[in-house]
Length: 392
Image 1 (cartoon, rainbow, N blue to C red):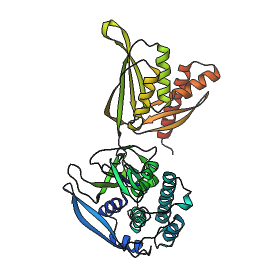
Image 2 (tube, rainbow, N blue to C red):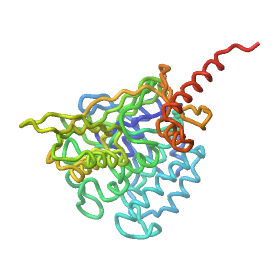
Image 3 (cartoon, rainbow, N blue to C red):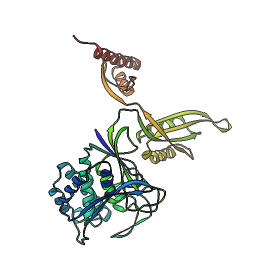
């Protein structure tokens, strides 16, 4: 599977996306032929430039300014009539549909009455179609995206001065990991946000992959201290130990009963914690206490911290980042005398039966838990031997 990873450390915009994909190898001449079929009258250029000392490409759409507004049905008809394959057409239509929904929500109007101003201009139509078509030309099967830097401050729009992220951008990025870093300006546009949330299968750190090509798409402005580019990495998924950035949330807790701590642990797991442990401590003045440690993804950090404050008497937390490496693993069903048990099998050959399956069977059939675990291990080892036995 070919994947494209969008590294939006300096935000994302439509022109940056197209430029990065061209820089990564999407054929410019073929892309322009497809964009010409939109019949917008625009001309296209892709030039080499630098941002923060880093070589990058910049994509330009040149057209005569028009003062008419476009509605979603008109834009969808333009896309449908374009001489490009069906997949990028469908993806571009999905992006504009998502964009229209966000604009309708931001301005409290029905979707059919949304007037596309900035996002409906010729350059944005070409940017969205161009990004979808470039992904197709690069044979990308799946898009993944980093957490998105949205910038800060304010932005001047046709509706006046608005805070960053702009209302439509904020609506689009609801539920996605974002942050603010760098100059006080808009780094992520509604067009870029719509491309990311519509096309990206997931958001997070760089996945294990074998890089085949990389590209850098330049933003319009160049500012010190941060290369204003969108980086795109093209390649194949790699079967290596999973590496991910996690956060560790810790608290030293006393004056708390085991029942309360156990309830807090259950709530933390239900809210998405990767792991929760409780370790006995001897605290100041020889008080007995507990170290509560939570391993979590960055996007669940705040919600899990809120649970700790709500469910325990602690007045403070320690939060720090760490790198987590996980062996590739799979689940295999094995048949025991008492029912089916899932076995977790890692890439290095280690295995273990799922506790919940074993407990359920033990309770259902009234047998010791250790017997069910032993039966599951025996069934898995037997299946391995049978698969390894040569047949005549």
